[in-house]
Length: 513
Image (cartoon, rainbow, N blue to C red; front, side):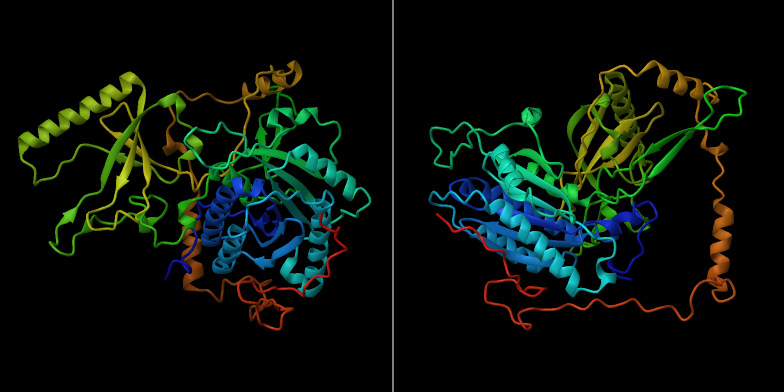
């Protein structure tokens, strides 16, 4: 069983509402001189994001993508294309965007931003007419994101003026991403020092007089990490049709027949599980599935066995470690009892380990460690993994994998400094007072009904036909294979990506200056 066909572990979050992910259209302002400043970081972030998204197994988080380039005219570099399985085609589009000239001083017509949005809606309408309905079920709206180095408020005003008489029924969200290029230029640097005058920070958004309901303004720094965070918001579950979770608390009043207190919540992933990535990546001692519990690597030359190596690189205050960035099953680390060590060495190792646990607990520290690849494993191209070591009251450490930059998804949860209103506070306190307080948690008291489920699963495997559900069709229905139409007759112009829909007849665009 290869990496593509292996079953997805049950721990991985696979919401069914991922099928409602909207298609997305990028409109990139490539007009000089601002494009010269943002081109490197934007293309690097987009390239990294597409490499990650196309490699993810499980449900499709980003279905369709289209890209426009906006200069003194409007150009569609990439008509709608399915993201999964099209990494080479998407990367060629990124390279074409990267090669766009950034020299000169061109001010695009003010109406060109709204014109790009109109043509985006026109392309989407044409796409759903040519593609069978089963291929875009649930995707009746699109999201448009405009990336520009021009002042965000000015772009929003241009869009409001140009789209006031336009039918935006199929537009779910219109986002203007202002990439701030303000920085202090160094004396020895010859890099771009273009300043976007009049740009506003995130804290200044309240000063905008009136924004259209469909337009959002966001300012990000001109670096690949910040721009990756903008793209990764597309990987979140965008269903939004109903709440994800009902949290039931005991009735607020003891002895009453009132209903339980119900808190309706949404769930959001904090990181992408490494189990969704292809198995070719060697990330060390992962703990996501049974495949990750491998034996130490053997050197093919000397046939010697190398244990895993973790290099401690930093001490962390325990209160500063966010548990949401840890994933997988933890491992317990304890002093070795290997029979090949002599007694004195084993005893000294035991004392050092005990001293480490004592010191970490007294200082309230965790340790951050990096997994070192085995010798000869190609360290120049190996992917590093990081772990947090947490001390315990016993003579042991708890090893937990920690997510890196590539797997983290945007998560903005501001801390509320306001006091809770008296009414809701009293309701929740009275509800929690009905719970039994347990000073020590004992998981042996928890019954999961796992044994009964395993017996049923074994019976179904042994007798698949007798236990088949009556409402299941037989033979199973074949999925409808989508038909891909090509407006260019199956041929693509050299250096251009092939269109999946017939070429669009753009609305009359304003003449360039």
